[in-house]
Image 1 (cartoon, helix red, strand yellow):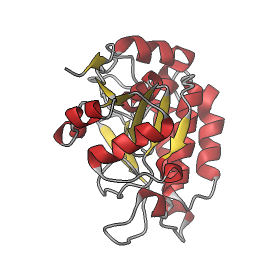
Image 2 (tube, helix red, strand yellow):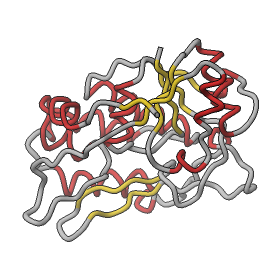
Image 3 (cartoon, helix red, strand yellow):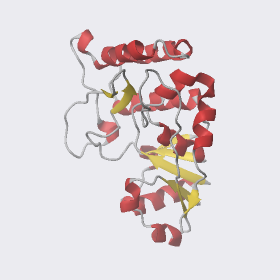
Amino acid sequence: MIVAAHQPHYMPWLGYLDKLAKADLFVVMDDLQFEAQNFQNRQRVRLPSAASWLTVPVEHGAQTDRILDKRIEPSSNPRQDWRYRHWTTLETNYRRAAHWSRYADELRATYEREWTSLVELDLHMLELARRWLDIRTPIVLASQLQLAGTKTDRLVDMCRRVGARCYLTGSGGSQSYLDVEKLGRAGIGVIWQAFEHPVYAQRYERGFDSHLGFVDLVLNHGLESRALLMPSSHPARLAA
């Protein structure tokens, strides 16, 4: 079995979903430390002049706060509430997208709902992405596994607990800490994700914006979105 893992993201980008789709099981690392200025509480969408951030405000806490501990900051002014601003931004910029009508009701319901837990919001967004792109990989939360150790030791423990013989990893920051030899000695193979971002038709006549939230692809291409995403990713490659 191939397992992959990543921290929860708000409105995840296509590379995140590509890794999810390639795995037999995906572990959401909700018990890792929250990282400010990362993607756990923000993502970009396309506006007429440039891509722009949508950020979910979170309450200030200790530097050691885990993602699952983070609470969304409430607002006393409805028109300044992050839900109103995110929904208004999406509606204004995507309501003329080809497939807006197919997904608008579920998006609106998301932003009409009261959210207090950041990880619950992120998991809801991930479920929308899985359903809209027909990604059927099962998901488990790291907090439910009670993992031991850090870095590679933690990954070894994760693979053993879920019965995985192969770990699928991204080609980004994990290269700096992943000990492939240690995983090999534990009987766990490593696959490096090789992802090529698809280029597709977007709203507004200007250059292509990559690494946006998945809604940009889905609202523009509807049921064709899965076919646009999946063939564009290179086969995963085994680590040497």
